[in-house]
Image (cartoon, rainbow over all chains, first blue to last red; front, side):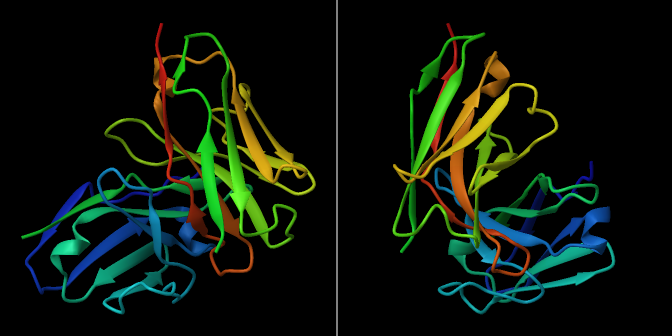
Length: 108
Length: 122
């Protein structure tokens, strides 16, 4: 089965831009979805498909992809963006799903 | 607004069966545009996909769990369920149920339950 690789931790200064990446062979064929999870809470979907931001998600969140890597960019990070971020996608070999290991984002 | 809520015991003894139910409200569990999934998160760790069930009863299971796992639907009660047998301490986690939207690009999990902590301990 495929795997999705994320940097375990990143930091960004308040108001600056940060890009979180997700790398995996299955991303050559399938879109990545992105979830934000704050401490003690369930994940919420923040970006999915080629370029879709769910209703209620601030427009500072955007996504992109190239070859085997998907990216989530937060332009002008706010204190409330401090959270864990996970990507997920379909597995390349079958109808299974896979999550990345998650990136802990700290806003300084 | 679709809502999902997990229920079940918070403590399961080793070697026994973990059973959880997710109740769906505000939408139809028989919708052809929805799959129903389970995701777990061990304490301090990341998200792990467990499996997916869809009407009228098709399933996809994580390869690492498929020998111990059964997912099912109860359309009369608008519920879907998880049974994981022969549990060990490694199955201790917060278990989430979630809706996977087939109509959305990427087929993301767009609605999640609040999660339920299940501890495996004697």
